[in-house]
Image (tube, rainbow, N blue to C red; front, side, top):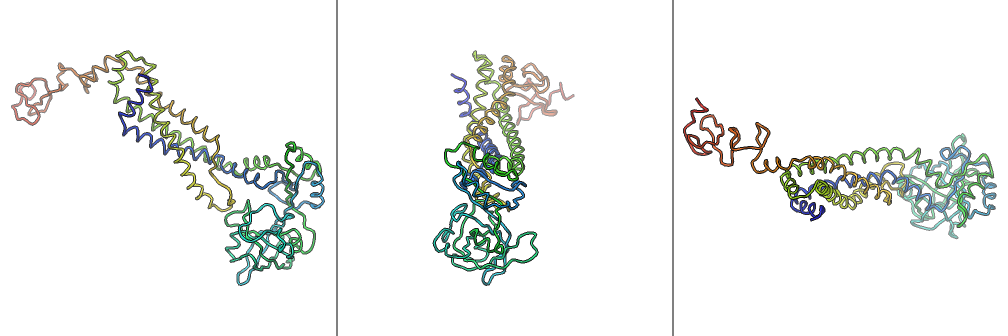
Length: 451
């Protein structure tokens, strides 16, 4: 019989212990799997959002992504970028704080976005886009996010007044009458963000009639263009600008924005690994202590130490492997619940997720469980390797003496045999039946121990 067959028979023989161990490992493994998903979930979700926008290059002022200052003469820069051979599309964006006033509602502060393209960067939920013929005929067509529409009770066709409030400008700009043409979802909008988007011409009117400079230029490269060539060409147009690829943006946010969740994931993953190791090691050790006679009998029958060690490794692998397999669907369900809770945090884009599955997390999960199974079997293997066969079998037959710490013997005065007797007065055990009583039977006390 192989080592695996011996381990399998042991698992079936102790069903309750096996099921409890698998359940415990499944719960701990589910937590470990979720922590691995959390370690890179936000990063992968953020990268997916960047790629889904259709733009692979972002051009900002020399202050970097955090400052978002207006780019001087951005319209001319956009024309220069369009003439590059590897560029397919260019989009200019300007964001300013504003106040919106709807009929019968108090004014609300919003973020107003001016876009040079009427068909990009959002998904229409209700109504029509800014590129529709009706919107093209309107002086100030507007799309709003769902939180803004819910806060002011807006529907497509309603009229609002928007007043832009640029920072650093002391005088108030005149309000502009706009019409709602649709409700849209923005890729990077949060759950409670109040945002409206309009055309760049309407944005210019809201800014007082001057030509507004964009603070962000989005560029999409042509399919099949060599990676990085368009980025280098754009960076060479003006030395005062900074051009970032999607990979550069993800790397920068990974260093600054996602370190907190990565540290939490590392700490919790380490704790769950320790718990899994202690659980399996304790169960195996208790099981081995209960089966010392059985293992000694196997050794006496000619089964060597390597085969016994292999059997224990298989037992550990069965417990950890069974729990690890159940941990995957359990962890996925738990991740859905936790992700729904964490996404309610303020400042988190609606389309971002904390727990994102990737093959890398699954591979690390399996490797960590294999290491746990091997480490948990080290001490039980060491116990069986140094197990004395003869003394173990003798103790299993005669029992264990708690006074001499050796196997019990009928010749030991203090060791009760299988049928033992006890003094009626001092209750001392003995192997002599005369003048002694067995439990439950009255008898005279022995003069040998009670005088």
